[in-house]
Image (cartoon, rainbow, N blue to C red):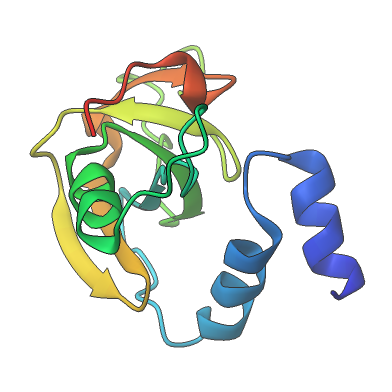
Length: 137
């Protein structure tokens, strides 16, 4: 693991090392948000339940698609720059875990799941740990 990916996981321990590596490798291929848009990686639960049951790929994929939590991977150059709309500053920053509406944004398929392209005003809240939110799948 590279120094940069270990830094990503130390700052944000809920972002798995393999996922951080994959994002770093694919970063040039992923869309770069324009204007006031953000790229968000939906939260993906562990492959095993607390009881040790291994969930199948279909269940994991459905859970990620239905997820309302995600990690902000990138922000467009105009995100939260409008001082009239956001007088207290940005609602989130790169690396934050956020909550968004279930059907918000555009879904873009990548290897291992999907990312979402959201507008800045589709972020509903920030959270410290996505495991604190009940996930149905």
